[in-house]
Length: 159
Ligand SMILES: [Zn+2]
Image (cartoon, rainbow, N blue to C red; front, side):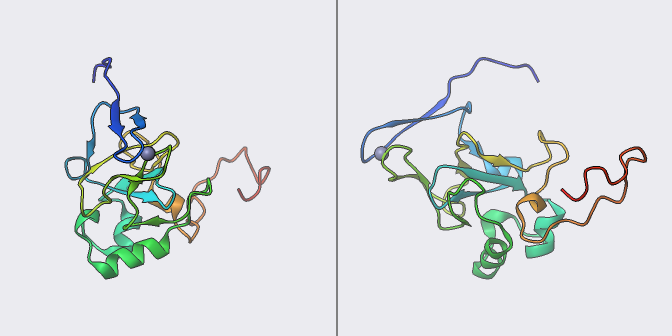
């Protein structure tokens, strides 16, 4: 794909009229991209993953994130570690919030298929982020890699 100069997405806060600027060319469509997204409780960061992520499917089955029922939502929420930057838990009820006053500026997944990607968001969709997956944000640590570099030995120990 050619890299093009694009305008950012600007979402004006309905409450304080602050212009929230997102470094993305348009609001991303989770359905077209086969992605799930959740905002943290602070509403200032986005967690993004692939609908086909095997670790995601292991929790909720073969179901797209935007059509999950209450049980699936609860299960997934319970499986996720909170935002490592202190923004709280990744919940289906969390809206995107104004960076200045905290008022909601976009509805959560399930109510809005388009999402905003805040600076410092966590994108674990391996498409575009090779080698990443939702397991990185899950409670249970993934099994150690089945391979090891013969030269590395146990030098660095457990990460
Ligand atoms: Zn605001």
